[in-house]
Length: 200
Image (cartoon, rainbow, N blue to C red):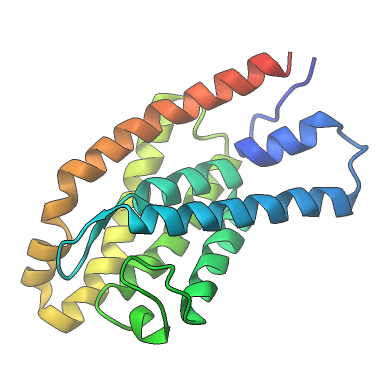
């Protein structure tokens, strides 16, 4: 029976558990590279599933960022989000409204930087074993969403003022993000339960 580590994020734990001590560094790095590509692709897709609010569109990215953080761990999550950001900085239209350096320094750039900070922080929590119960997952997700909004609103307020940033960059997203937190809070423990069963 395979046993997943109590303090290892989901995907790194699965990769390690398939053949502990046997997987070469090259093979493991390849698996991480594939996960980073998949995560980056999901971020691009989730950016395009949106309601075109202004100045901050409502997308599915927050949910994807939260799940990447909890399932990838801090290092792989940071690499994945950074890969996504780099593609955008290079001009590829991966963000909700396009791409380019101007987008990062524009009104919504703070949310994108918040993605990186949030996913890395959630990865650190996952390294401590959080994410295997709905309670620890919910607390993690709330913290992750808070980080994204803190970064996003702080930057947006430079352009439109703090009050307007709250009205346009936070309040319209409360219900949707609560739903995302609920979905993630049940998805993570379910994923762990499924993985533990198939590895027995």
